[in-house]
Length: 294
Picture 1: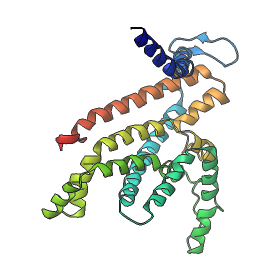
Picture 2: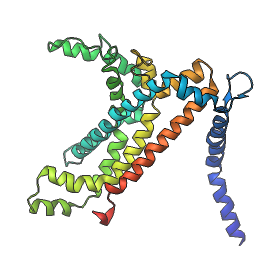
Picture 3: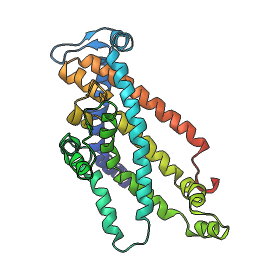
Picture 4: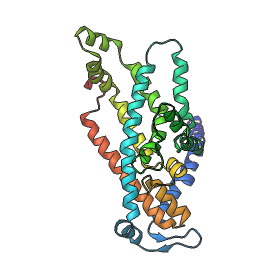
């Protein structure tokens, strides 16, 4: 009995750092932000309770909210499918038995190690500026310079490529999933005369559907919260065509010092992410296959 109690205390000691981190860095700030969302809080000074005034102003008197929401939806619709599709394509290529394939796998994963850092966003800005590397390459083949970051029609697509470029983590998951598909499934399909596309849609994609679901949920959550690329590369311009929700939230909280208003915006974003995540999970019943359900 004594040894069992000692074992339990040891287990509690191991999880203590995580519990403290969760309480101090996640749960307490979460509760505080929910309270601040009902207050007027200028960061310096005491919060003043306003009730639902912040939420009412957001939905009825703040056109910037709807603009940033529209831009963010477009951003998610562009970046997430492209990132997942590109990750799957590269995973299929890297699943081939080619000499030196491990080196290529490492090289393709490097962008995800670097992550969505400020340095990468600065690099992207220099690549796509009017006299940047991309336009210099285009000029050598007789194509005029394109205003990648100054044209409202294509600026959002340009910064979306930063997210797409960091496909390494999704690629690794797809690659691991491809390794788990039995070779016998492909052999049986080829004996039946199935072509490459039919094998992909009837064997590979259904087998990978749980991983597709996981990547879709995670990348969607990350895209809704994205901030760095828009802040560093375009500052939300031109004409607020890249003014992501995260950038608006940052401006309200740290530029205008409206912490109460920013907290209300963050909780609205939480509800939006929760809604789309739940809808994705519910839709997965019709397209995600597990084990013997194939």
